[in-house]
Amino acid sequence: GENVEQHPSTLSVQEGDSAVIKCTYSDSASNYFPWYKQELGKRPQLIIDIRSNVGEKKDQRIAVTLNKTAKHFSLHITETQPEDSAVYFCASEDQAGTALIFGKGTTLSVSS
Amino acid sequence: EAQVTQNPRYLITVTGKKLTVTCSQNMNHEYMSWYRQDPGLGLRQIYYSMNVEVTDKGDVPEGYKVSRKEKRNFPLILESPSPNQTSLYFCASSLGGGPYEQYFGPGTRLTVT
Image 1: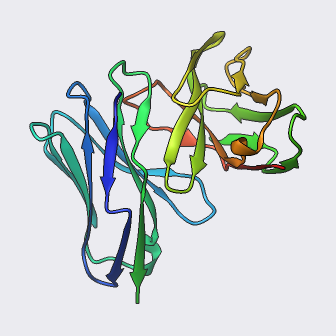
Image 2 (image 1 turned 120 degrees about the horizontal axis):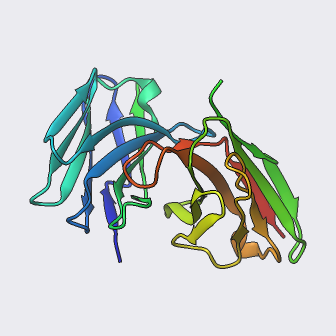
């Protein structure tokens, strides 16, 4: 079935370092790839997304890159801060375009 | 304020006692869905609805029912809860299914003993 693999499952960095989370997807027809951030005890919220007609998208300290040929996309966070500590989920649109398939999540810890 | 609400936020119940978790959105979204979140398994979709009276199974529908009688409401029903349904449940709504931002509710922590 359709699948999204996300790595690593946990990531610890020092404040100011960069963090990279990678995802691969199985359905070559997918065209939409969002990233959600879930702070402890809170709901997931969209932080950035990318569609298949672009290769990279930036929003201040976060960026997402997409390689459709290899079927993978990545989240890049630069100059990490303690408030970036959270669980991050990647997702891709399913083949039918009726749902999102989520990765299992990456717990990012930023220590000061 | 645009929002998705869920009730109750916390629920402890016993095996076999029917329960309903309500979900409501005020954004006039056509698409609504339910997810469960378990440690190490991420967010898994239970059911979704593309519009009023249109519902379909997600990845893990066993043991759950839903209904969509009104656009704003999408209740999740557990007719005979079992301990393996102990989880954190999120309702979400969006303009559409795949390629649209999902707006999540605050979550319902369910424990079945």
